[in-house]
Image 1: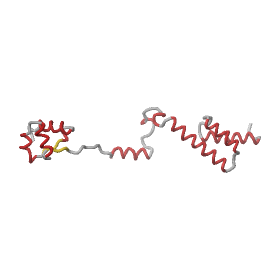
Image 2: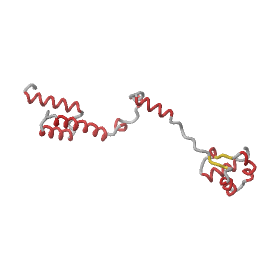
Image 3: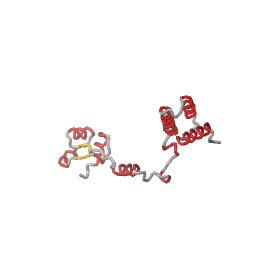
Image 4: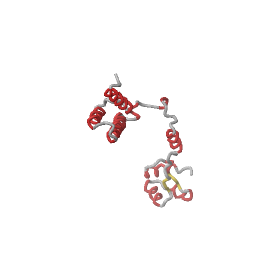
Length: 154
């Protein structure tokens, strides 16, 4: 279909797509070659002699394979990381995870009557204040405080 590049360009402009996505009906080649104005091309588009091809989308196969590998913790080491730690997981998200774990643990201790309400309240407020760096830190502190109270510690 040589010699139809002008019609193809006009059709692409009318349809608002690239020239690669314009389909010219080979059976209407003579009629298309006679079209010289934009109005002629619009008529051919209405007659379906010139049509728009569907857009090509990139395959998701590679993305799916990558996601499956990441699920197995492959390719997530230091060499693959870009950005700071807070870019990968925000400081707020880290805080929320930590404080929820601390509060859940304290509530379990209180429900099992392993700590009193006053001790619970004290440690709850200390957690809120950011005293404990992790759940392990809270557990160690509780253990140390109970040993100290019993007279076994230093």
